[in-house]
Image (cartoon, rainbow, N blue to C red; front, top):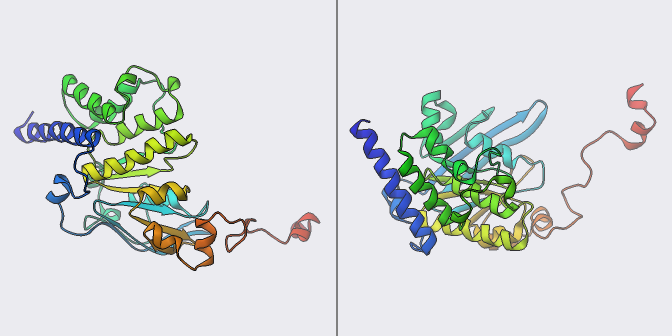
Length: 308
């Protein structure tokens, strides 16, 4: 191993231990932690400008503008089908936009070559919908997977880091269990340990509260906030759960019709006069968001005239 490689791995181990202890103990209560202050060139870590994206004839985004601030939890909300998960795929360049820019720390991720893209993606951690654990691997090996893929750490160091991360989410005792033996809440916490095992700068949560009982949901909400504040990372959280987001998010974006319909703190959104914002924030059945998906005339379609 070269000296440069050795230094990188030593830093990874050191940061893993320090950060996980901070999360578990509730230390570093303010989001501007040591790691955050070491790289604080701009308030915005991610800047999305004039973003257009379509799937065939269906236009998902039209001139979308979003800022993800350093050290904050940013929530992305909106009715089903508005492209929230699609936005996450664009940010991580699993998809390419039709137009616009996506700047990650000043670098347009849409312009990177494959080598540069892989290096950029190592700055991200991802908590997938429903956890997405590898079913044939134990809890320990699920969390260890990114370390085995992206580093040359010894088994001893990998074991140390993995157990530290599992301890941070309260599941060190479940290290030898298989995913099928876990409850939904436990599986989500294991997935969170895996998402943070490489100590990312940006942690992305895609619908982290879906299918959880109130206790498990409360645990995940607390972990999201505690991780962000202790580690000084920037978090992007996609969810429909308005009540939970109001307790964890610093800033929220409500997306509708391909654009940002409203943005601000949860308190600011709750006081908006927009009918769309009111409908979404208060779960109202009637409002600008229609119940029926766009379709041909009902009578004409029933009679089959549209096909004749």
